[in-house]
Amino acid sequence: MAANRRSTALFLLAVTAFTTCVLFTVTEGSEVDAGYCELKTNTSRRWSFTLTRFHNESGQWVEFTSTREMDDESAVQLTEHIFECGGRKMIRLQAALKDPFSGERFDHQLKFHHMTGPNTALINKGYTVVKLKVDGHGPVLTSRPLRSGELFEVRMDKRGTSKGYANGIGVTTYKPGDPPIPEHMNNLKSGTWLLYGTNIWSNNVEVFSKYTASNVYNLKPGDRMGVMRSETGALHFFVNGVDQGPAASNIPEEIYGVYELYGDATQATILHPTGH
Picture 1: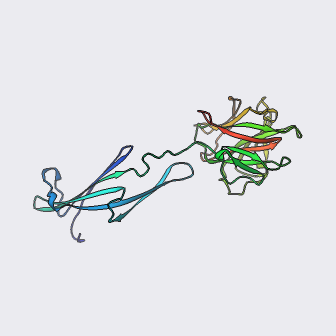
Picture 2: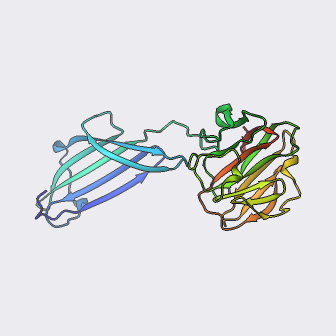
Picture 3: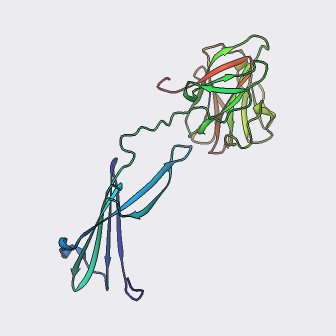
């Protein structure tokens, strides 16, 4: 439209599980009530758009974009109606959006991230981690950040007997691969809160001695350990499903779960509330 013309646009977006509807009303001249005017359907024509959306690593929709195309197979079918109302020309655009992901199932369950430490490998579709060299350690991070109130729980599947200690679990503010995961997670000087044995370590410093009487070094195959950031930012550790109480406070919102095949631990699997 010409720059000297006034135009108004009314935008309505309604979302259901499978359909989105969009209405635009554009008028030339002053605003009028389109409800009193009838469409001239014989002047309508077809447009089409394509919407692109994607999940980030957290499983959230982070962006969608639209592009205009002349393609009847587009996910959006847009009809343009041109009509007159009160002596003014009006355009109404009405669209129905077919959900391009309808029928697809997205698995938001926690897995181990594929960018593992130098002494680990993933099996079981990323739910299980195994140690490559028995003498070394093997940290792994979760595939996405933990949600507040979400329990990151790991079952130790196998362990040796040469060292007499096993397991490390906690959280970190670092994303997988940034920095590269070291062979021992407690070597990092920032952004970590970890449980080894009965003590809490943060940034390679012991900050809570004898936090728990349930020593994770002594766990046997089949035993479980977990960690959770509460809605209030407190960090809790769990041993065989039992909350050991708050271990730290003011934990940042975006944190990844950390498990370490430490010492004698050689294989472990992420568990979920429904079982896996």
